[in-house]
Amino acid sequence: MHRAPFLASLENYAARHPEEGVRCGQYIDFVRAQPRCFERGLAVGHVTGSAWVLDREGHRVLLTHHRKLGRWLQLGGHVDGQPEVLDAAAREASEESGITSLEPVSHEIFDLDIHPIPARGDEPAHLHYDVRFLFRATVDEEFTVGDESHDLAWVPLDAIGEYTDEGSIQRMARKTPTALAT
Image 1 (spheres, rainbow, N blue to C red):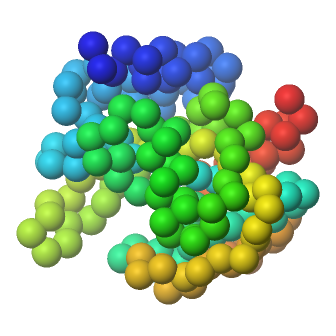
Image 2: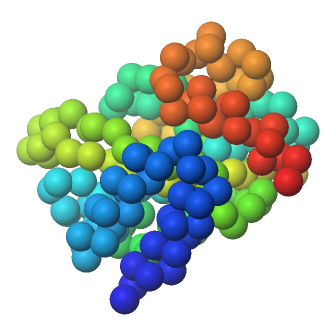
């Protein structure tokens, strides 16, 4: 089963974060129930991959002001059928920022989120089952604003609230020091 390694990663995350049990359970149930969970064409929702990209020192995160959603968010996007979600998150982050020196801090899942995406054009409203990985820009921190963004910014972790009150972004900012310490 092409979902088995991903499910094992989700179960590992759930064991490490029992305080997120409800969300983890919903995510795992979705992946188990949907053989096409990695495909954008699954109308009910699909897995997406995101990158929480830190600068070399681990004090700032790269956020995008998302063109379609009009909010400051982490980099990421559709996995387009790829069950290796870490690779998809890295690809999306590089495409959206132009930074090619991104390295995973860990191969373990950093955060999970399930969020609604509003209907747009011919695309119905659906859910993104977003899995986030922690990355660091190791060499070059110069970014390029791509077509999917209004802007990009290196934001100090302690200033995230000046850009967004998005709960999952706040949660990742709180998790960062612990993740860097392990």
